[in-house]
Length: 506
Image (tube, rainbow, N blue to C red; front, side, top):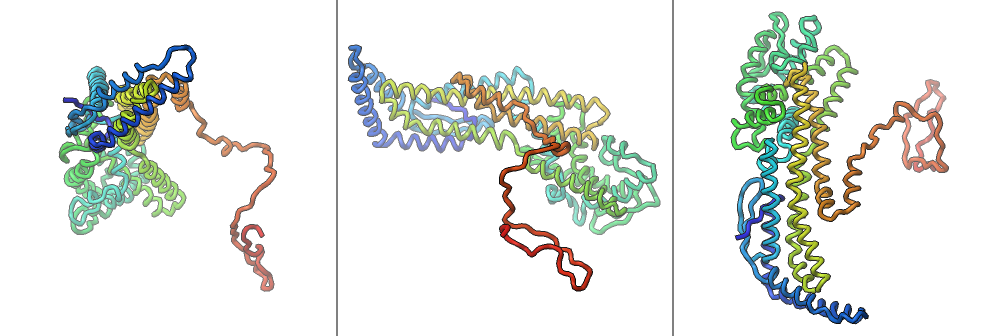
């Protein structure tokens, strides 16, 4: 029995090996081997004619090629494919012996080495949880709680309720009223780690409208805060857990908060940050921002309202563009190259009979299988680096006066998550180049990898400090279509002050 650990996609690898098994069982497969042997004889004869040192015909090359074909590509075996991430196992019959043996040896070496690395690192394992799983978990919570659209049905945990409008109204008409009266400070609001206590403003005079039942209710700020807290800590939190269940990949909604808590414990230490408060604060924070916009609009501060709204939309667009690193970059690439390496097995069976040329090509082919299996250990080392670096930043945030998971702490955490996720994406994408450098000892691959670490200039300093002088181009092309807003003179007999519309500068 031969077992291959799939580091890409086990279903894709199963389909590829099924195709290889089908091809190797046909008569065309043996015919192709015969043609390859004929070409090998011709190559050996031509080399013998072109050499004048008297060594003659190298029959041993052809004999060795034929023996290797009989050993590696003629017999077939049954292969079990085990997914390295889910543990599911599928079987494929009649796979050529050579790719099956080499793939089994290499994949076992790579996967088991990775597991030993992870046991020694004592960090959340990549094979069991995924690449940069702790960072991905915290990012997924923020990304899926940014707006009413992402909340979906969770925004109405009870019939007739509307959590976003309720919290936005409370912030606009209660919380910020307390700020205007100097009874609350913005700094206190942003640094309070309790999601509901942060926006609390007790008043029996000021009122707001909330939607926590079948009918809208106009209540005092004190009563509204109490009723919002009952729904937020009850039905709304349960709805958030259901919303995040599929995103975080847990089996039940009750496992959502423990999954988030596990991520925080790995980065900041056990019990330092409360996962349930982080989840609820991540949902309330966009609603707080919407309340700030509404307050500026009510006060007719249109510029401030537009500025805050633009910042919110740009933030949401940036988070929406973020992709899961391991799922979107590394794993599809590994799955494709892994399947490709087994798919070309019939071609390698054809070229092995070329003699010494085919033997060198097969050595390169088996080196390719080793190259793929080195990815997992390298990724495990990168995962350790990302987790340890992020843990240091998380510990600094937790020990400072940001009071995670306060609003200010979440803002700072967002920047750290984006930084280390982008760093992890760059290193993960560089994994093939790193392992290729080890296998083939190529200076080109080393230069490519080091080039990715070059600190490029991403800031255009000419925006703030333009050049005093700059040379004009020899030829300056005009736009094909240009428009202008015409100004009409108040005089009755006057005509428009702008020229007629022209296309193409004609």
